[in-house]
Image 1 (cartoon, rainbow, N blue to C red):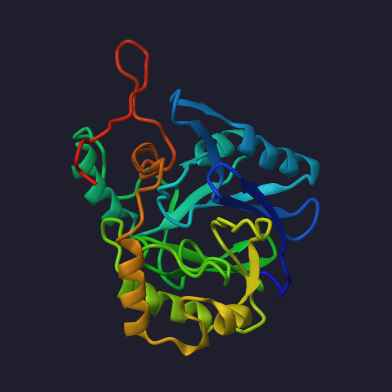
Image 2 (image 1 turned 120 degrees about the horizontal axis):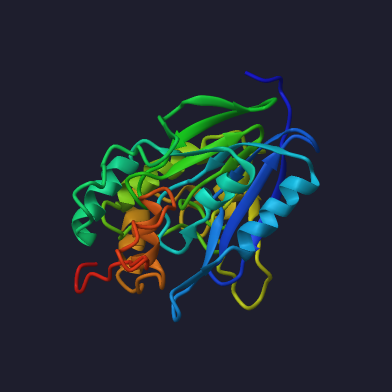
Length: 290
């Protein structure tokens, strides 16, 4: 493991999807990790572009960084992953939690994917287990399994920073939904308690922010602030209180705009399905399935 150093965290906010991408590194010229890169997708035209990812790549080159890891916190439902594109441009191993295999099994059936689609997570370069330690140059890092939003969410601790997947939002927004296939509010509560047990000064970086009109987008908080002020779990709210709130709230929410294109791409580690003989790549839209 590397010596005890603190990471620099550079955020990139995608306004269209409310998604955060993070660049994590020690200093210019050092190793780096990229967390949750976004591939831009226009759902009306079904066209992709790399504007968001190119901004991250530009910083890699400007800071002379060596990308070791491209870390996915889970198979996102609100954006398509740009991990393969980033890897082609600047390198890095694509990693995700090992329970992605469960999510692949669920959605292979939903999308009736090709028989050759494997359910072993081999589309990714590395599958992290709970508590697994790794390094990013001199930065110490570990994976923390935090299911509930999906069965496969993984948070990453890098130095004094925690990238918390879709568990906690900023304190004034609360927590992520738990009504996707395999999600569970009680499991989410217990995952959140693991995060809230971290050192109170731990910096927390959220995956998304959907700010009210009264403030600009935010993405960084602390364990202490979440313990004290998170509207869904702060102040010692009980598991039963959380579950009742979360299940009632989730019942009122519509599906994310990009869930159908995003999931079938993201369980492939961001790769598109194989093109048809006419050279065009197609995504499936299952009717009445979600």
